[in-house]
Length: 421
Image 1: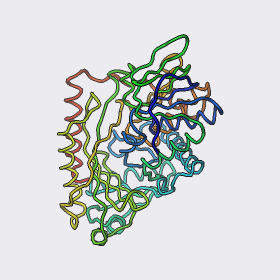
Image 2: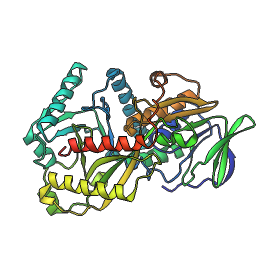
Image 3: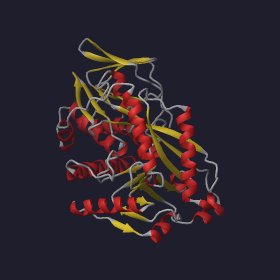
Image 4: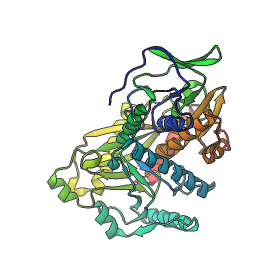
């Protein structure tokens, strides 16, 4: 699906800046709350070709605090589980309504993989936490992990059934196509360079056109800083991934295991591995690890080269029969964290609403903040708006250069601690 670039000046009832999980979820919620409203979405690139499409596709329902040691949250986990499942159900309804390929939304669950005794203890601690919450999980031994993944690397795993495995680009493009069929206007290759107050409305400006509107919804995640909000309070982090070529029959036989699975590391700074099949983009293995703070929202070529070397080693560790296989693709993806783990989902100016800062949980948290921002823009409240508007502001970050030096030192240290995970 190819969508036009904005040309000339126009008007709309709502303008959404950003066409990722949050932006398109906001657009869909607006169609429900304001049928017939003129809704315009401005996406800087093409749908799913930015951070959204580079997501590894885990739509997780359980506590998944990436800044902790074992994902356990320190807030109201039951409330967060309820909200995450609200997001998953909302996305599932969109799959039904818009006829999105079911391969792109697979309720398969996921596994926390452990490669060491310490990581196994993390899993057991997390399992105990889930039991106290009344949530099901299943501890898998070494043999069971080998039967699922084809790898002898893992000593144990913790399976939880509520995660949906997305093909993120396919899901987002399907969501975009469905919204267009409902009358939403989506412009691609239309980066917003600012918005200004004019005659009681906002004029949202792109290089090739503009839209005047009374209500703006910002769903740009960490680029919220680029529009002047929450400066020096957001951590711009890059993660990295590689993907094998499509595996032939010989490689598949050598690999073994099941055709679809997803393993997150029991230590959040470890390595995520996912196997996909033909219905999701070919028989391939995706490996993701390494993190770096880059306040300018741009990873460097050196960052990518270093991460590719680390991920090759991690892949070879897990799949020695395929060791040395040259990866077909390597990429980085941008996420945004706050020191205190809060989102920015609230009204930030007169007629301006934010659904930003997903804290590494772009699929579920992005869907939720998009829903909530749309509801606020329509003067509505819900369990989503109540939860996020009650959160504190993001904490102020240390000054530069201590912020970047300190954060990257900490990330490298945690990466070293989780080196086999």
